[in-house]
Length: 469
Image 1 (cartoon, rainbow, N blue to C red):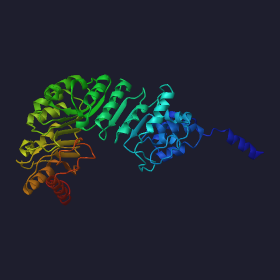
Image 2 (image 1 turned 135 degrees about the vertical axis):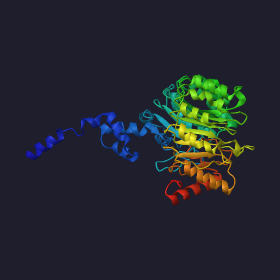
Image 3 (image 1 turned 60 degrees about the vertical axis):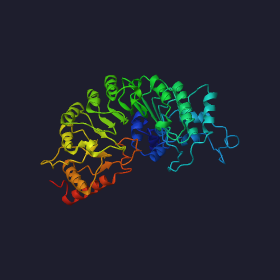
Image 4 (image 1 turned 90 degrees about the vertical axis):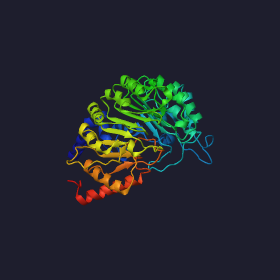
């Protein structure tokens, strides 16, 4: 009897503390777990299964889970939709798809171990479109808020349409592997389907294969953009939305406006701007006066201005930049494209580096400059206060003889803090990404600057820090 009483007492106690049945608390816990551990939590009890599945399905990094929900598909020379595809349990499909808040596709379909199975089949969207049609326009992913897509072939663009919902506020697509015709068709459809309150819109393409007018139509229809990245599209006034925080575009003479006029309009229309990346064409003559309007954008944290021409900056200009951009964390005033006629004498004098350290705030962590290495200054007598700098790049700055390598190494050892271990450079005209992109700066490294980097590393190892200290 005593054992039975104990059994009754134990069974009457709650299996879980009440706090562990609150979905908000469970979500915070699941965020700290690995994906395999989240799978395990879904099997613990009925109380946890919904919260665990919400977390697991919230952000899909592949369409593969959706494929699995569609059932077993027989694959011969192509997908067998007639005989190899059983009727799908759409109620079960909906029980999972309603949990999806974002979906990502990078050109391959992956299993959990990460191995690519196949590219997206041309017929794959057919069943999804059919589902949307028979449900009278019901969204396939009704709570989806973000699509991040890399299309390597035209047929992969078709799948995007069923994945759009009325909740979408982030749309990012790379169509560099697709034809101009397919990209244009997609954009025309998107102009009718995307809600007018997108927060983020990214469109990456090859400049020669960009349907400019179709992209502009989508931008024109959007009222709430905070982040706009269209690196192949020329900057125009219609792109300047009042709420913009992030902007990436090209600056050419096609708009009929000078760089100063464009940047003046930008500063007036986008007072909240925090990050800007502009790639200027060679025909744009850029001076400090051209970028002066950006001094009014006091919230800027990243200024990435790539210009394959001459920068004319004097000491007072550097002081004005540092005074205006007190929150700046990354600054690029150089080119990663190699053009005939661009000489080292066109760069910012090496002697100006201490000015950047003196006038910019301690928040500056990344600096890229096109340097003039012909007239080497004397070494400074005291350490330069670059307290938090950890990234330094020189773009396509020319560097000549071995004597120049030695002199530049000694000067940079005196100026740059020990945490700057690499000198990033470029020797190609085919790099379109930002100098601050962590995956690309070291491609096609300039051999002369590589020697500077190696010499600097050797010098600091031998002397235990700065050689001059």
